[in-house]
Image (tube, rainbow, N blue to C red; front, top):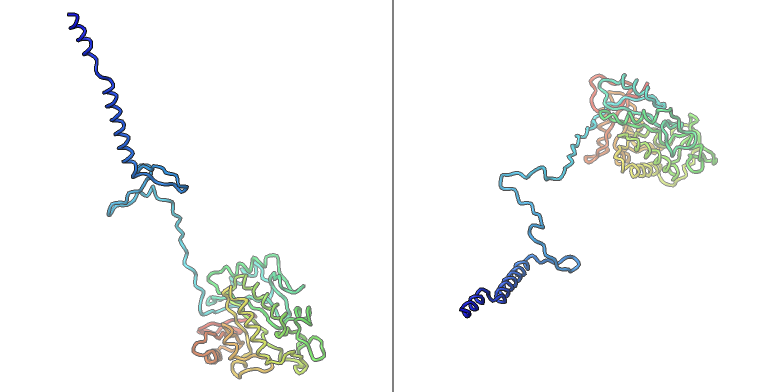
Amino acid sequence: MVGTKGYSSYRGRGPRWKILLAILLVLVIAVASSVIYLQQFLVYSADGRRQIKLPWQTEEKAPAPDGGQEDLTEQPDVNLIVQEPEVQKPKETAAFSLPAQALTGSLWQEALAAKPAEANAVAVRLKTSNGTVYFSAASAVSGAVETELDTAAALAAVTDQEELYTIASMACLQDFKAANADVEGRGLKNTGGYIFYDGNNSLWLDPGKPSTREYVCALAKEIAELGFDELLLTDFGYPTEGKINKINYNTDVPLANNLDLLLSELNTALEPYGILLSVEVPEAVITEGPDAVSGLDLTRLVSRVDRLYAVTAPEKAETLAALVAEAAGAEGKTEFVPELAADSPGMTGSRLILAE
């Protein structure tokens, strides 16, 4: 009986080391399997360190099924810009002229109220033949600028008129103030070495002098910066009245060459602004050919300007336009614009009605 009790108490205990060994083997196998499985997710960082990146750590947006739409709530904000169509300026311009004076808001409103029904353009005088400048030009000579308190705002109101084509008129070489301010650098002189006075006691700038071209180009650029569509040069050329034989032209080349040089420099100065460049000439330059006294030559001008203006009568406009087109040639784009004392009923094409 004693042996039976002893045997019975011994059989109730199992071999613990075998159980521990089995658990250890299971853990080793699990760890080994995990290592083998995780090797596919082993990546290297930019600095060369190894790291594990599991699938759920990288969010990838599943593609939308065919015919389906993505959830718009997850899309980034998109700013839509609706571009308004650009207002096209008229190709044929029927322009009315403002008086030669500093523009004000009230004068502009009066001009708009009195604007002819057929007018789609306006011409504003910004520099006169005595050298007065009707806008705040930084490059103007001392004493030349004459403006009112609201001139700048009034000019801005003009150029802001989207439905109106805007023309800035500028006396070019007839300029008492600028010539008198620098006789040696800009003035046209006589053979005695003094400033030349024409038959109207006016003074002129010498286009053969670099300072003259610099002055004209500087003013032209400031006008372009105001936002005008076209710059019309009047008083362009050498004087034709007075004691012409007493002028010291200070050049060995044809006078037309100096005018060509001035126009070339103007075109270069104005190129960034997209403004048209035009010149007013006597009617005879178109109908009779080159003028050796003024230096004006139609065949030269048509290759350097966009438009040619001349004071004329309505019945002559068509003939003058044909002559300008013939001089410009098949590839030429220079347009003739008649300057009229009054509009003519039924007249078509571009034209400029002069101020009274």
